[in-house]
Image (cartoon, rainbow, N blue to C red; front, side, top):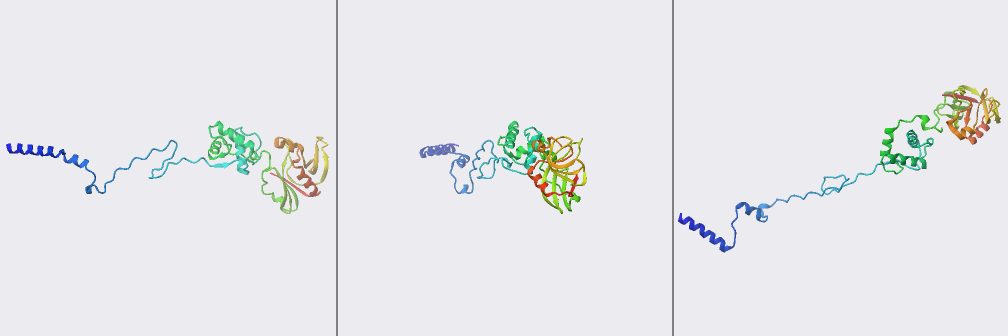
Length: 280
């Protein structure tokens, strides 16, 4: 026992002389720098910085945060076509546009889109992007043909079979168009207006029986220039009222044309005896 105590005392004295401290094996393992026994170990990678607010993160190493792109623009000022006409018809349904659809994205359409966007907290660009369009779709119904072409101008449908031979004024009430056709070939197409429900334009196959360049109605006292009569007092003729008011009015049964240049040209070409077909 005395020998063991003496040995421990000697060890303590030796440590004091050498200036070292006694460590446990665990402490020694943590303190020493990496040597051969630590080969292959790597320090854990630092946590990536958090992405800025509103950004979309990509968790792949080295990829920067990205911001979602703005919605795609479908139509903007200067565009034309049937899609623009539908946009205008839908804007009319929610009272942001009051003129009839024209098919041209002009200043009035741009202002209407801005008003619609601002009312709903969308960026007021005046351009119709996908977000604006989807919101408008949810608030409106698909416009019918007469809504799309409130002021006329819709494309003519396929001609009635009775129009495919000879010289014909082919008149379609559904599309509100008149075609001047010769042997199945369309030479001219114009917008037309018809009588009201109380004075309807007759339907059927007729023939031009009288032309009167500066005609005035004996029944109503109204001018009927370039009149081409085909059924009693009903004629194809120019109408200044149609030119001014469009489809807000109606004729007394005649087929009104609002393009004076076009009706003057037709008047010069059409002959007495030429066929007139009026159909739905």
